[in-house]
Image 1: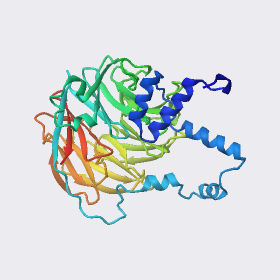
Image 2: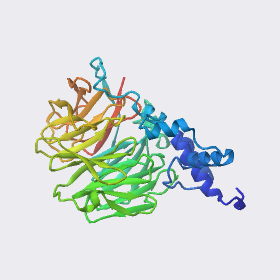
Image 3: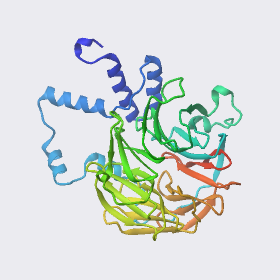
Image 4: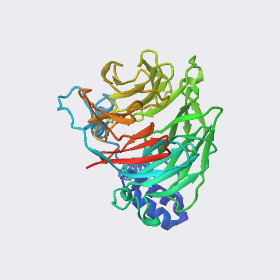
Length: 416
């Protein structure tokens, strides 16, 4: 790239890499990053498309179609909204009771301390796990699916990277939407960002710190912001580009509760938080104000929260041993999933990849309880462990999930 054009070679390549990842070509992006020796940053993964659109509009001297502008002004659904609403759970639609898949353990690897947390990348191709030993592991799912995953040569092993930079237990992990950056939070009061496109290197390239232990993190869909919570009553928002921190609600919260988990809606418009006072709070992701408070678990602590893919529902987990589904627009309770015993301060339920199932670790059975998401019928318990399960993460792409346990192991379970 000629510097006279005003944009350097590395900046153009970074934009290309981020856009390729946004289109689902994370592996190709990693290969190009390694070949060009241009390290990934956390720039918005849609930046190149935005620049191209602006350039074409300027070149043609034509504004966006008036029909599109009018539709947005009138609150109509855009093309992206329609795509977001397609599929997934919808309690207003009749559906047969789901059949629980028969899950089998495909792979197991071990940390040197209790396995505490895990997350899949947006495309389901990678898994990150964290441990009380302060280490992180990066697993390539495609290698897990090979029959020889447990006995493969070192270069074929599913664990492709081990990362170290924390000084205490890892409490949360999240992949940047571009798939090339991994964020982790820990009890050492820090958040770290790792460039996982680099062939080597075990340390973070960026970090945030605060005066309390972090328990949960979640990226905005653009990747520009990172929501965080922990042993504090506040939800914090960090600008990934500048490192500046913002307090949701302006920091004037009168709550004394701690916040166990935060989650972004797929549109990025809302953030949900689960607090030890039993409340699930919905926050305006732009204004930073609390727009709804749901007393979700009869005064018992709310320990987990996640949005449905459409953003229409929010799923909460609590120490009343119930998982509940709420209508985001009205705050109305629409379903209760009962029959599992929940006693961990970070207990959290998840949807299966197609949202036909709700799944949560059952502390009494040391197994994963599975409900039909539509009817709330308890279908089965799967993935039995000899010791307590500390975390569950569901694949966004296939009928598979990852469990963490106090036996220091993480296990990949797939349906056959």
